Amino acid sequence: MQIKTHMGVSLDGLVTSADGLPAWDWDPGHDGKSAPLGYTDFMENVGAVVMGRTTFEQGLPDWKDAWPWGERPIRVLTHRPLPDGAPPRVKTSNGGPQAVVDELKKSGITKDVQLLGGPKAIQSFIDADLLDRLGIVVLPVLLESGIPLFPVNATEFSREVWDKSSHKPAKETVRTMRLESQKQLEGRAVHIVYAFN
Amino acid sequence: MQIKTHMGVSLDGLVTSADGLPAWDWDPGHDGKSAPLGYTDFMENVGAVVMGRTTFEQGLPDWKDAWPWGERPIRVLTHRPLPDGAPPRVKTSNGGPQAVVDELKKSGITKDVQLLGGPKAIQSFIDADLLDRLGIVVLPVLLESGIPLFPVNATEFSREVWDKSSHKPAKETVRTMRLESQKQLEGRAVHIVYAFN
View 1: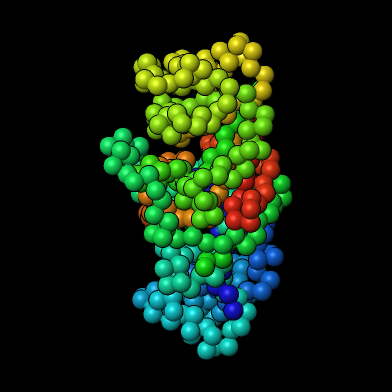
View 2: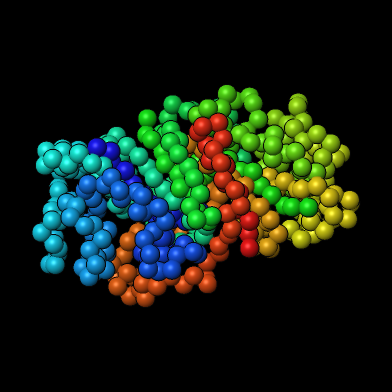
């Protein structure tokens, strides 16, 4: 069982526009109907889906009419009860990343688990060393405003800070990952998969 | 003549760490001495280099001992005189992107022009529709804090904004680009080149 993502990200690193619309919808080649780039391949070995509460609440109205997850069990990371209209195969999980992974294993899931998002859920799995594969699809668009996959503290160049710096990278302080694969999708996007240490 | 970049960028979109050290230096596989990934190939057809003043002032102390630009003319985008110690082949240009491109063409440059950075200089060329190729090398590291290649307005999900949204992407309002090439470099980084419209 691998925990893995397949996130559409704008070239400037956003997973949604400012109004919350997924970056996938801004893909210049997307017709507004078909599955996101690479999604069918990605879902092939996915046996369960985990997502944050915001992602679930945002998606539910669209999913109700045409449930995109088949028979797969869904776990929503939340402390509160689910909203009305959630199908019975959707359950809550309130113990954090390790608890939901343990519970899915216990329930007999052996295929991979899609971690759908959002960014906070993904970050919590990375922090818990539970994300096996970070898959992103870099879409050829700049959104400028929206929710970043990796929020950063944006700085400007400061001569004073630079002059005081050792000019040596403290490599042991930063998180690195291993490139597992990269390929272009439909001539316009780049699918990158990283393995975390 | 093409105006083109070759920027090392962390997976979280930063071109430097918080102290101003280039993302290249944080590449987990970089030994601190050799050229940045893909640089030798990139420079093959480069006949001149354009950079912002901050980039020049930051680089000059290192470059003085082993000038990395060969005989290529350098243009620094600035209104002020250059600091002491700038070699004679470095000249200032204060008329903006179009002026420096015109001047380089006039001076007989036919090979490509490297736009070295920083991000503000790159953005000014994009805004002026003068960047032909945006080349980035996505390095397998998260820096969390530093100078972003593309500064964004980071938002959080808002139920209120989402409920008011049309749920339709206003695609005509965002900048898109064409994927020209992508490949992995040394098994760890992804070199992506975009052509702007």
